[in-house]
Length: 293
Image 1 (cartoon, rainbow, N blue to C red):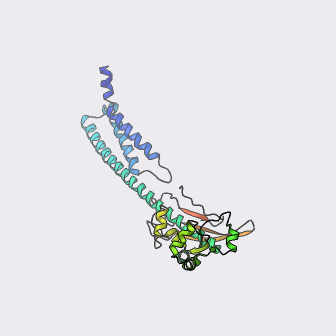
Image 2: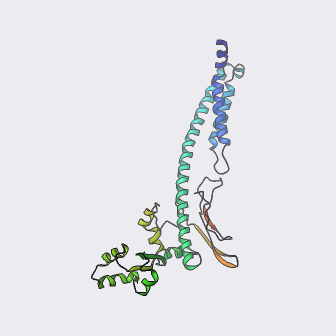
Image 3: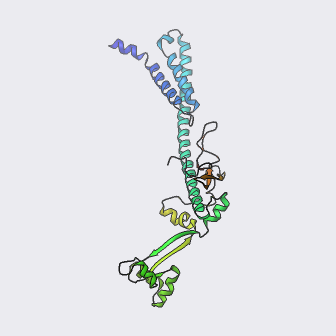
């Protein structure tokens, strides 16, 4: 048994280097066309395998003591240096991935916000805005209808009868009716809400898309990050303006407006295929995004 362990001990160093080398090589080869592993990992794996080979007793026996000490020392130092480079590259990779995630999340959110604004623009004007300046102006226009309903109908005073007897008011009429009864507008509105008066409010008010969706209160209520119209149209990292194209296609005999908005500078390494975040299509009437969430 002692002889067995004595023989095994001769191969411990080689085994350790081989395992480390194979591990790094497998990790390097696991890279895909989108995210390749750092090249230093390949060099480190080869160096570890070479050192492991040189450390084999059958190889050492063919070298004089001075030679194999020099080779092992150089190989070990080289492996240590390359291993350090690998671990350093791993830290860089982690930082890269964190930056990529942050930039892509910001980019996707901006594309989603632009899409929401464009869909609202289309709902109002029947087509998509063909430039961001027009879309920005639209955001502040009071053209988004919002139903304003206060008070409820019941069997003794249904909607038709309420309408006939003049109990259905526009929002602008509330102050006048309140003054007629010697009440303040807020108090009269409270009575309408609590159905303490036969009066009801049924009206359509108009607000802006910005106030309904992009204001600080609206974003907070939707649990979304604050928005800046000065930066919404640009890539969050490079500052380049998103690419916006519009067209139209015939669908079921009806012409429909189409849109394509995409990131001009996808995040990633040079000479590596990148995901171009975008939504919409010029040949199909949809506004689907190509992101995963």
